[in-house]
Length: 78
Image (tube, rainbow, N blue to C red; front, side, top):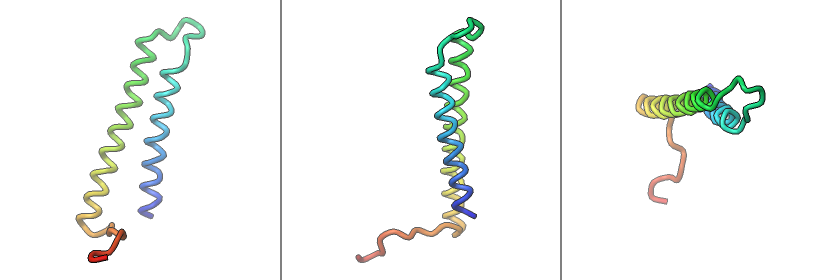
């Protein structure tokens, strides 16, 4: 269950980065989208990514503090 939640958060982070890239790279085709609207959408997508990243980091720290996550790296003394 923990892996699914972290995976979904990571997918949200990557999706937000991709949407920001699309907003940045998409040209003005019909003249209805000016640069300020496009920049605003890009900034909103990147702010969403930063928010999700911070929230995920805080959730991982809280889960570690309460014992839901345990480190499984190199054992001590090895």
